Length: 200
Image (cartoon, rainbow, N blue to C red; front, side):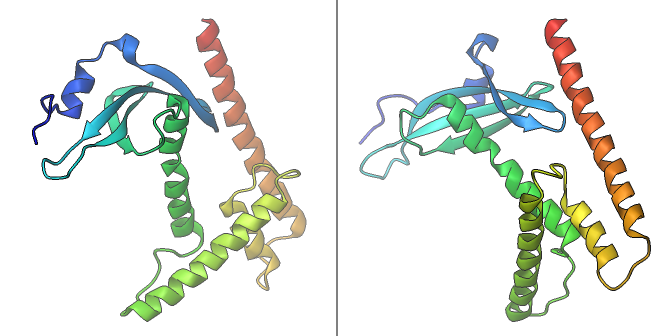
């Protein structure tokens, strides 16, 4: 068997595409305004030369609006009719995985172990996952009243309300409110800046 078309490198194909071929997709709201990226999409066939048939894939090339030289390439096996916006959102889900690892290392001891065997490592990871589950449940439970509650905030609250009490309840709440006011101000500023640039 011989392929009907010559093979082509993905980066070579992407470099040859005009700016008009890139599609802007808004992935989600973030603390720095709407996260919008530009994507290239193409259905392609991959064949290793030995399989009985080629396989159809989605190729998605992503670039950030402020860093157009930094390209990310992804292959996906979603159904052929999947919209480009959905493919881009699925590709963007890796952010939440990376955020979970960051929170685990910063607030639940994910990287603080000296295990010498798999059993000890599994025990440590199980405890970390339980701690992360607890923090997630607290954030979900407080989402309506404290929408900016973070793992760091939960850790701060635990440090106060568990047996060691360094500061008063009022001071813990005051510090929490100061942090949330700063976060909200940063979010508002990012959206206002984005609005000015659009009108601009």
